[in-house]
Image (cartoon, rainbow, N blue to C red; front, side, top):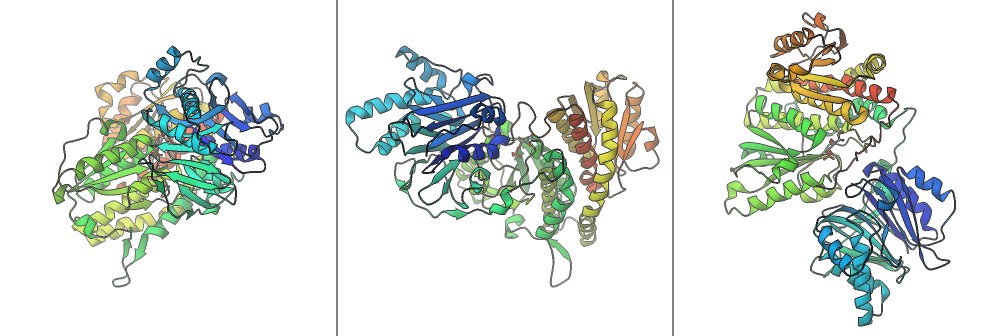
Amino acid sequence: MCGIVAVTGFKNALPLLINGLEKLEYRGYDSAGIAIINSESDNITCNKAEGKLKNLKSLLNKNNIPGTIGIGHTRWATHGKPEVKNAHPHCDSSGTVAVVQNGIIENYQDLKNKLEKEGVVFNSDTDTEVIPHLIQRELNTLGKLNLENNGSTLLVAVRNVITDLEGSYALAVLWAGAPNSLVVARRQAPLIIGLGEGEFMCASDTPAIANFTNIILPMEDEEIALLTPLGVEIYGANNERQYRNPISLNISEQIIDKMNFKHYMLKEIYDQPETAKNWLEKYLIKNSKNGQLEIDFPFDTNFFESIERIEIIACGTSKHAAMVGSFLLEQFAGIPTNVFYASEFRYSPPPLLPNILTIGVTQSGETADTIAAINMEITRRSLVKDENFKPNLIAITNRSDSSIGRQISNIIDIGAGIEIGVAATKTFYAQLLSFYGLAIQFAQIKGTQSKEEISKLILELFKLPPLLEDLIEKHNQSAEKLAHDFFNIKDVVFLGRGINYPIALEGALKLKEISYIHAAGYPAGEMKHGPIALLDKKVPVISIASPGEVFDKVISNAQEAKARDSYLIGIAPKCNGTEIFDYLMTIPESNELISPLLNIIPLQLLSYHIAAHRGLDVDQPRNLAKSVTVE
Ligand code: M6R
């Protein structure tokens, strides 16, 4: 989390920094700050404000700070409260070195203790502040060595300092002693360099750069770079200069309009029929020989043949998509599948088994835990000298240009377009579709389903876009009405079973993250083993009841809740049994396997309207960030 941006060689650095931060605010909005080498005084001018970027903008109050070089930061607080003193950039005691950082410096306390013993006074509670002090100390030492080129001196100083840092970081450093030079470095946090003519930019993500250039150079792990108006020098961990070709960005993808929607989240919910259409057009093709529709992922089918088991690694909403995926891969395609929280997998991976496919799911492609867990899996499998243990990998992501995209070559690019709302909606949808695609492909290759069953499922997928349009329109109204009655509740219980249990979890996550109402999802059959004790007339129960294998069971579980006075909201088609619901959010009848793709819609809309009714910042909920790039 946190977004950093840095520019050099521009006529006027400030507007570029502000524009870059606007595009990075999804990464955190606890505070924002900017440091520029003021061309009138040659000193660093630093401005910071608590809260969102708009506060920094009003602090600057249209005053320009003349300067061609600067750094900026938008913060998601890790160490130290969201206060001005903890906002980045952080400076050394002389105010000549300024640093912005995204990550966590795990050994900062030891470094801080040592610096304090040397007499350094700290002004913040952050882990980052050790960095400018260490750089200044290093610069003093190097000054004594009398290095000539100031930019190179800064590069050496930063390199010496980062070798002492433990943890992950992406950082940008400004030094008044080298007024044209920026030094940037990364370890396990993203950083991308944008190239212009005599103008260079570096940022945590491409949208921050897209207004300036479409020519970029993503930095690799452990790299450090010197940016001056004369060009960019990149060095690897071994200090060797790195040379590689820049790549082009598809700029049109980066410009997102909210249209007439009040919030991006609502727009993104409405985008979902288009998301589904695009996904189907991209990954379903007609076989020219037999005319049948088939999944067309860009991998060699031999790849699938040897797979005996699947492990899926993900966090948050991506994990919920993975759980639906696991159900499909086991129940439809017949492949034993396990889903892991990435943060748990890292420290307690399952014993190694042969012929496993590892799937990393992350819309951002930057989630630190997911990236680290995948890396760990690649390493431990590579150490076994047996073909059957080799790492077989797939990434399901919305950002093929992200860290996971560089880590794994088999990518299912879900193609949902940039999602701005911190609460994932359309990316969840496209992740779900990708799992349907994988299950169909495995079933085809392994022969675990008949051609007819496979075609039936594919046809159901094809029917989705118009169904979704109607469903969204209808439930945008019903959810708004329900929100009126429920915006003040304190607790909500979501129930689902089988393939819809993860949808209950996702419904609960959506509600809590944007409305701050406590919500919990349970497998409906588990209610009586404890959670039922929570129920009374103040706790509404939202029950997903799709006709099929477990329909009657879910209805019985809902009855049990009703007997405890809970107000019952059903997510179900109008059919026998659903009359027990106090309010029914009607879903068209469908094959049970497809039902998650319909049931999620009213749940997203209900969360949205409850949060909007509470007057909350739906797109940027408190304490959250879109990309979780720290552990
Ligand atoms: O980018 P990722 O899919 O890896 O993100 C994982 C979670 O951080 C994310 O899904 C989070 O739970 C969202 N806030 C959900 O709306």
